[in-house]
Image 1 (tube, one colour):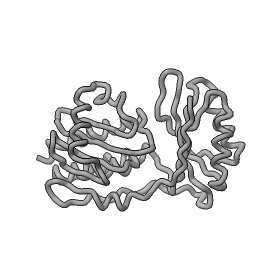
Image 2 (image 1 turned 180 degrees about the vertical axis):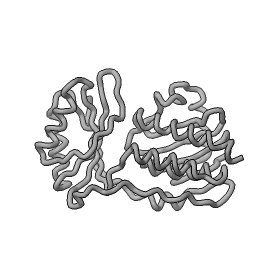
Image 3 (image 1 turned 120 degrees about the vertical axis):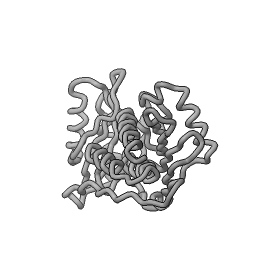
Length: 252
């Protein structure tokens, strides 16, 4: 399995949020608090996404390699499993960013293990808390246009996406970030409707996450370059779409 190492600093999305728009009215979602930053503020905070054999002991071997390099593991997120392989993301504090290339080599000394990417972040995400915050924000919508804007804004933030769009047939209901041209979005939606695996969250392009709202023609699209969407993220997005769909009758 070939390794793909991506070393980057996760950019701030404030500029992208400035481009969040609703088709029906100008409304702004309430901000959601960021997770608390690690108490070790002098350390470099990195997210290390690793492919490893889905067998007993493999996770411990990777963790021991990280510890041997003075890495402090503060969280592990299981993103995907299947066909004997797991994709896990480690939240790690390390003393210095210059250690990252050596840390990657050390991790890949474990048999069958490959590092997919490494990202430096200012604050570690907490997928469980982030999901609950997004769900709460969606449920606080005061109108249907507000609902669509909240859905676009907060899923983009939660999944560190480059852009998000809520679209109904060929009408863009809300968008955030630098989304593709309208014709490209229409092509995405047409492709979605032809694949049950995609609509179920079991498959999809690596840089695109899709959620069709139940009993609706509304579709939520998220785009993220250089940072593959994994199955857990796709299923989490579907859950948020179900919550948004349940709000529609209450806001009519």
